[in-house]
Length: 322
Image (cartoon, rainbow, N blue to C red; front, side):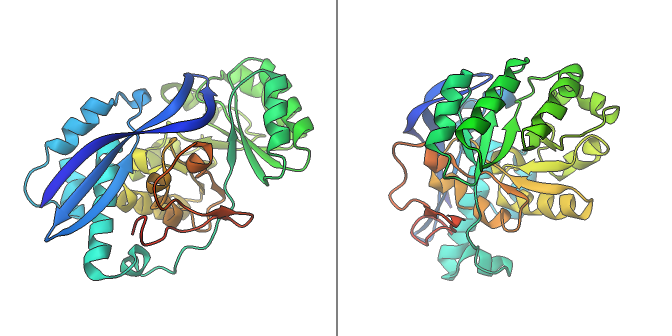
C-alpha cells in the first residue's frame, strides 16, 4: 500500500469572511491510497482553530506505514483532518476494488439530493443584504455573524434581501450568554431557525442555564461520538463535519449516536472541493440541515464536480469518489 499527500489550492468565487478572518482561496490536502494498481482518494481541510496546519496534517499522513485499514486507522490517528482524508480514500479504494459504490458497501440506498444551505459571507448589513438578494432564489441561507448587536442589523438586512428563504446563523463562538439572551428573541422574530455555536466551546456550560428560545447547534463543541456526553442539556443539534470526526466511518457512528440520543443532525463542511463533500452526502441523508455548499463558493473545482440543482446537492459520480 502506498499513501501520498499533496497540497491543492482552489480559488474562491469571491472573498469569504467569517469572524476569524477572510480568505480568497481554499487550501486543501489530497490523499491518495494505492494498492494493487487501484487508487482511492480523499480530501481534507486543515483548520487552524483546531491547531492544524497544512504541514502538520501532511506529516500525520506521511507518518503512516504499511497496510492501513479503516478500523486500525481509528487508533492510528486522532479525529481530525488527516484521518478524514485517509479514511475517505480507503472507502474509495474499497469501492473501486469491489466494483461497487460506497453506499452499497454500507448496505444503504443511493443518496438522494438534499437541499443545502448557502453561506453568506460576514460583512456590513448593506453588503449582506446584497448577497442575500443575489441568492434569494435559494431555499436555505446560512448567515455568518460576528458578535455584537450589529448582528441584528445584519439579519434584518438578509431578511429584506431574501424575504422567503429559510435562515440559519453561525456565530462562530462569537457571542456571550448575555448576547444570546438579547439576540435570540429578535432573531426568532425575524424567522431565524437555528444558531450554530454561539458560545466558545470551552465556555458553553452557560447554555445549561439559558432558555434556548432559538435552537442551538454544536459545532466546535462536537467532534466525534465521544463529544456527545458533553452536549447534554446545552445543545439541540449536532453539526457533523468529516474534518472533525476524522472521516466517514466516525461520521456515520456519530450520526447514529446523536439521533439515538434525541439530537437533530446537521451535516456541514469546511470550504473545500467536491471531493471533500462527496462522502458527506451519504451522512446528510435525512439530516435536519445540510450545509455542503463548499463547491458553490469556489471559482474552480475537481474535474467531475458534484451536481447541484433546485433539488439540492446530489450524490457523487463514480468518477469523483466512491
